[in-house]
Length: 203
Image (cartoon, rainbow, N blue to C red; front, top):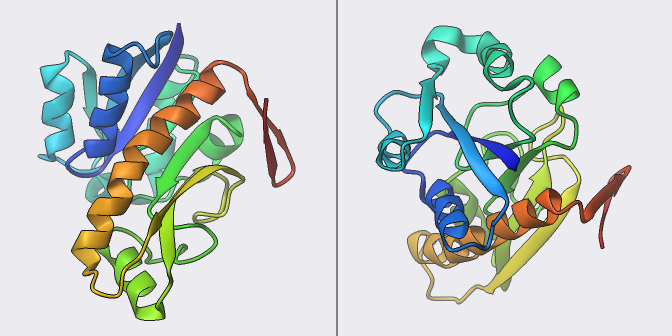
């Protein structure tokens, strides 16, 4: 069984998409071993409880710069992949080095556009509309020591219309996030992904 830890900070719709993909058999050899949140009281934790998945809270207001160290204590030797699904804290240190190319994140833009420090949530879509892009989308990438800077696994695109609001664009992109995240997990779990420098090769 390919074991996954999911990191969450909010409502957990991307987390739910992973649960659904396991339940439908799309991710047939995967199991979610634990869900870790950096905030108390988020709905993603309730989703985990509804599916009898272990939950842990490492409050970033309490643990501050040691959040990554605390995560490492929970996951070391217990999971094959860490999935950031709406996770807002920056991962760093030994966790990132020990889990090199074993941590994935989903970002709601076509990296390298509209990413990096301060670019998360609705802000990403506001910037895309402000710039006037004709396509946007989402990116699943490996996590490295930077912010949204790791090797890109896959991307999905959506059209952007002149009349779009940030909320409308966010919803359109989110639909593709739900598809992309499970697709990336499946490829990794099946050993179909190879990384050479910044390039990711999919068999």
